[in-house]
Image (cartoon, rainbow, N blue to C red):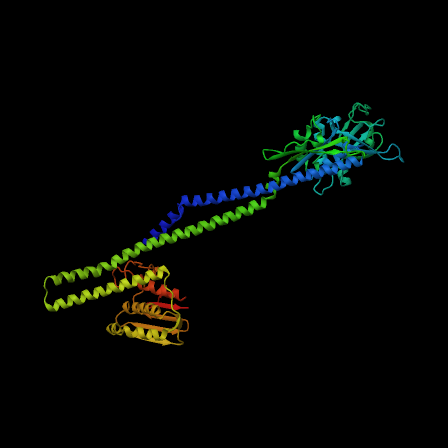
Length: 569
């Protein structure tokens, strides 16, 4: 019943936070959580600081390179260069850029937009010519967004799903039509698509009004032949479209990147807007002069290149530190579990020590109560002036009880030394065969009184390197138990082998409930083998502690005739 109550108490204790307590557990978990969050925030801040610096350096490299390309081209195709490099510099998903060119008076000349770059030949053997069409000049916003969806549509194998073509007017350089043609992987796929290969098309109403057979002017007749006017090569520049449609939409919807001022009151080449961070997004503007022809240094530049940059350093840092967050969380959780287990073990050990101390105090009080009562009784008899014969008997009993108490006090002192860690065994070879022989002679009187038969068999001597005084006490407790708890005309058999000593007696068996805890300090069984309540664990606890200090295991088990005690390396 007592064991069951103890198990129930442990379950309740664990349910409400164990020995540590729910509040302390919560405090430890919260402390580690705060440390984890702060450390991850610090790591993210350091990472984003480095990325912000890298983005600034990247902008400066853009200015140098793009302005050099414009100077090399002598400013003849600035729109094409800006659009091409706005597309080229879109590989960094967490930085968006837009370029603009201002003249010497600070007036906006051009900026990068969604552009068709078209190369064509007027005649078969003529040189290639080029024209740029800004889609905003021809298409509505809805049409531009739809065309961007086609441009972003790519199959899983990386091949384009649609082919976008544009044609210019036969006369002049106006955009005449745009059409989107589906690409087929097989003949069966082409046949399943029906007659039309065109997914979407647009015709410039200002140029073509030719009707087809049904009277529809939305698609000119030339589209069916794949040509409206001279053919050529088309490159579509949608900035950041290579990152996906959402990336292009983010760039296209950014007011900061799209709304360049129409004019600067000061020289744009020396203008620098402060780097601003709002909602974890960095906004940066930088500029550099453009010299189209060689000229003396005192002349002013003809144009200025301005770059606007929208950066997401925090987002980039978070994306790059995903694994750090994961492993940091796993490590933090492991540390929490480790600390909780250590604290739990510490509190559990302290609780056990407190419980052991209470048991120790109760047991000492219980053990001292009997001899003190005996001493008091005999002392009261002496006070009544008993005759000389009884007086001597009373004095002998008092002396015997005081010696018993003295022995108990010595055991308590020895236990205290063991528990405090002050005990250090002296290393010397001790023969168990000799030790058993000496201990047997010390118990000869009791052995003769009970008429106990003792048999000692020694195959090979068990030699222990340790402190002889304490080993003598440990084996002495085993011999004492074998004698004290043996029956009248019983037997004791001692087998000594290398690394092992077995002591068997024919006493009453230990109850299964007491057997697992027989070596605990002052463990109280329900009933002792003599039929009275008694503390069972003092001598065996001492023996077990001494053996463990010498790296010897003590095992106690029941046999058919009694109890077996084994001490082995």
